[in-house]
Image (cartoon, rainbow, N blue to C red; front, side):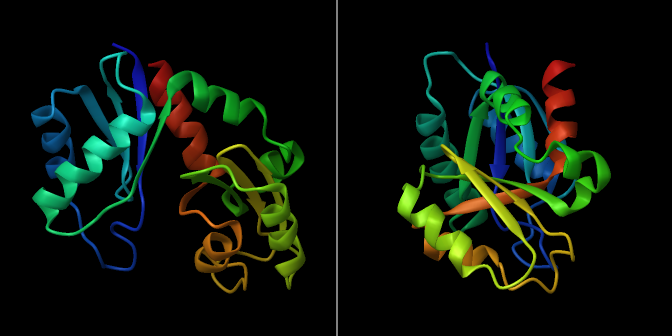
Length: 181
């Protein structure tokens, strides 16, 4: 069975929308997914799924099951191991990844934004942030930190017209390592 990565949006952030990772692994097992392993407490799962299921179908299945189990909607962003390796390899900010990986964010998106939407997002930047988007991913450099930036997840989603969830580059690389092991 091919290895997949699932990223959950907005769980265990600031003490809100709490989801225990043990319970999340149980959910994956109950759905028939093998070898579910979590990383950190922010909703990162590496698992094996039947090859006949597309990432979009996996997202729908996981979202429906999580809504029942946790009694609220949770967005899932699923990427195959091959897709994730490509996303890592295509990082347009290699110098920033080396110098300050905690301030480089890889954002998984539900849908690929239009070129006009990406241009509008770049125009909306009020600080020193830099954005590059390719397909269903955006790479964002926050040189002055993420916490006080005006380039918020809400602004990004509204401008790009799609939902997303971000992971810093350290986490993105750890997920890539988990897929290989």
